[in-house]
Amino acid sequence: MIHCFKLGGINIVLDVNSGSVHKVDDVAYDAISMFEISSKEEIVCSLKSKYEGLTDEDANELFSEIEGLKQCNKLFSPDKVASVAAGRQVGSLKAMCMNVAHVCNMECSYCFAGRGAYGAGEGLMSLEVGKRAIDFLVEHSDGRKNLDVDFFGGEPLLNFEVVKDIVKYARTIEQGSGKKFRFTLTTNGLLIDEDVIDFAHREIHNVVLSLDGRPETNDMHRKSPEGMGSYDLILPKLQKMVSERRGKGYYIRGTITSKNLDFVNDILHVADLGFAEISFEPVVAKDEEPYSLRMDDLPKLSGQYEALAVEMLKRRKEGRGFSFYHFNIDLTGGPCVHKRIAGCGVAAEYVAVTPSGSLYPCHQFVGDEQFELGDIWRGITNGALRDEIGKWNIYSREECAGCWAKMYCAGGCAANAYNDCGFVGGVYALGCEIFKKRLECAIMMKVAEA
Image 1: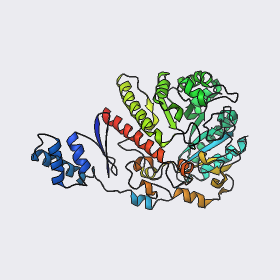
Image 2: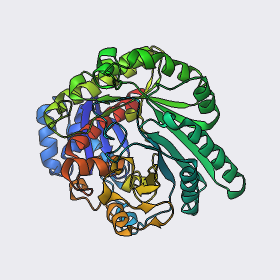
Image 3: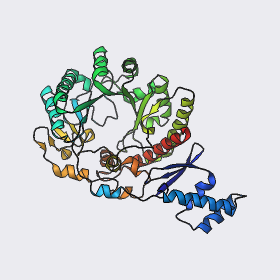
Image 4: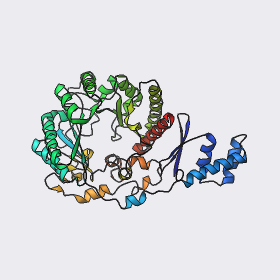
């Protein structure tokens, strides 16, 4: 399987199964596009009618090069991954989303967590539950050394003292267990102070900071309980936090809705504020929500991603570049084969834990009782659910069979699929199209800079 596309004035051919990327001229682009659906004679006739001066010798040389690439599995290569998927088994835990606070000090209109309470009432995680959650992760992480924990909410800084104590407890476990914890903190930024900054610098591998871009965009959705916009309150705190990271990981995380379909302006606004690590996610919401994205928005979204890629290349040449999370791609190695097949490992290698200790496949399923897996004391008691979610991958989803992007999206997000079509084994159609456009942009940027 191949995927041919033109972007940024470049002709690109992706060999799906091998991951090989080829930058080609117009003649080669057309020949490769027709190579497996037309005869050599038909292709040569088509090329000679389109490209004046093309000789039989030129065409034969081109065909020889294409055949050579095919023979060395860099074009039209066979699928060698399907057999791995067939024998794939549920692995041990490697990551946990720790919802330390089911309460929030903001009321963002698009919040999937229902203002932080997940529809189950407000609550803070106790240190006892936090310690037991760490123990559970260790106990079910057979064979793994590196473990990831994301402090999430609600707003986790509303339970900051417990966060600090959980980290302290985990560090004591590292000393004798051979495990190494890597912590992430996701925060709206309102409670950032010197104590938080110092702690994050010492203990937190990555900080995710929420900001939706321009003041008018941010304040449209990200409001205080009193209805006040948050931009002016959080910006100085985010800037101070990032300035003190001193090279450690962070992301400014924004949301794309139907109200900011010109989201490139929001991303560039964030970049112009001095933030170099940026991630903007499309909102996933029911169609009746006024801010939801619909398939009709796809042309505008696609155009914005293309414009962003071009602007990023320009800024990099000028020495003022920045990173956009969804354009980050490794064409020389990339994710391991299991991650390419099944993605984040939801319910199998990754779980979420609530303040009361209940376990869910991931943070986006929290609060929906049909997706409760068990708890941190009894373990996984709903093994059927875990197995059901775990079986879905790029080879078990019919929609993925002929998709050129499947080796990069791993079938998409199970929670987004469920929220869109009511089935974890389905696909979120708009999300698929957005992903493919972002992937084309990411590949184009790599080719342009090669």
